[in-house]
Amino acid sequence: MPMTNWNQCPAVEQTPRKISGGWAFTGTRVPVYALFENIESGATVKEFLEWFPEVQAWQVEAVLRHEADSLKASA
Image 1 (cartoon, rainbow, N blue to C red):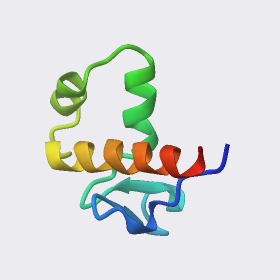
Image 2: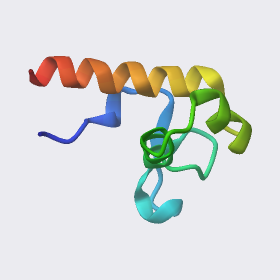
Image 3: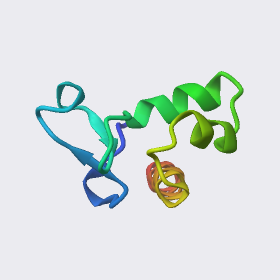
């Protein structure tokens, strides 16, 4: 499965000095993979937002929508 191209998702950013250059929610130090790891472990989006209050709901929605669109495009 190809990796997601996050360059077109406004909810995330990649900054060399933040989390070793990995993708993070814009304006935070919360890595995008944290969302997917938490969901995979059974957390809800509501719980994720409670645990990471610096992440906005619109950002989570944009990331999930972007990932879904990427999966559709690669199918």
